[in-house]
Image (tube, rainbow, N blue to C red; front, side, top):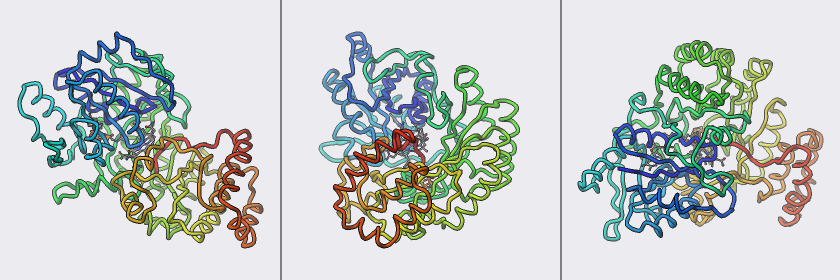
Length: 501
Ligand code: B12
Ligand code: SF4
């Protein structure tokens, strides 16, 4: 069969959809991939040739995260209008977490990990057999939702092919306007991860995370697969041989990929002997600088030294809040600040002198954060080592997560899609309290917010004054006056990148 697969990831990574393409190709099907990486609103031009080409496909498939729902709807509406007889499938994290809602737009929703499932479904479709019983898929039948069960998780990830990186039969939306055949030049242009600012190869060596934070998809994933058979909390590792082979194949084929970015939730979770084997071979056979994410508690001196020696240039960790109460009770992150500080000292001693860039994620704009939590966070972050860069995110409620359900129940959000459409949230528009702005000032403009100023701003009289100021005044002060100044001096202080370990 001929399948057209759409993906919205702006770095052209999208491991999930590339894996689906690889599995389908391995099974003998034709897959055209359409990468639509654009956050703007410009009008997309679709030429008659492109439309004719789309018409040669038997099925349209869209891979999406929740933040891309609007774009998925646009693409689906266009395809539906032009090709009313063809089936449209949605798959990925959003279709898994909001299946019924997704089926308002598409005909088939794919849930969970689908490497094997998609091949079974497409083979059946091709043979003209009934396919409504295939596991992992959902359909609306006579107005009723049919959710077939999920098949067991594949514990041996080495059985999967590598994500598909062919250039042939791929198209890309360039500058939000023209859909062009993918070339190496265009790949180079888009395949960039923010912390290297140069093209990097994304690779996923582990699935799963030791944590199940309430705002994270892992939380939903674990609950969904927790059927007594699967062990969704067990980390699944690809073998080092397979990971290195994939990286070598891709970086040899596309030499403009100058770095490697591991997408694992916690790269440091791997056992030491495995990392030793990885480090030795990576240094000898790949040798490119690389970056990863890690849970602070997984970082040890032995692992760190080993990984820096084989090229680790950047690591992103999650702190989220400096309040132990908030982390424990609201986020279910059982990692006290005392422990975080211990691991930061390891980074300070062994990573910083070697020039490794260390970034920590924080979440702001959380209505469950009390004034005491905010004070504790600010005080604790004043103690953080100066080398630490911060990534600040506003709390986004992703469907299916515990915090989403809690916020709907408490009336904090309506559960409508405006709660999850942000791709990169702008810090110009933050809401809530005076202390949120104080925190932002510190972490976006450390140079103009030294410790003494911070201590003054969080003093009792200043907090009292801050509370008296109407929200609009604070928002205007930050958004219209201070934000542009901070942006001019320190670069645009939007959040960049992702990951929230
Ligand atoms: C690596 C990663 C990134 C990387 C690369 C992302 C990318 N574009 O590939 C970077 C750092 C760029 C990134 C950015 C963001 N990310 Co991110 N990221 C991840 C991470 C850690 C791994 C994703 C992955 O590769 N998974 C492995 C693959 C194999 O799984 P999969 O994608 O789910 O695909 C499987 C199934 O879903 C299904 N499937 C997928 N597509 C399709 C299509 C069809 C047709 C079918 C049948 C099946 C199918 O089959 C696949 C194979 O089993 C996940 C967390 C996680 N553990 O998944 C978060 C995650 C996907 N990210 C998330 C978010 C929110 C973002 C950001 C919006 C954050 C932000 N505000 O900055 C940005 C988005 C920007 C962007 N350009 O995409 C959320 C999404 C939540 C949601 N409900 O949608 C996640 C789940 C983390 C979380 N907080 O919960 N991210
Ligand atoms: S937020 Fe990070 S640490 Fe928490 S479950 Fe998700 S990936 Fe794991």
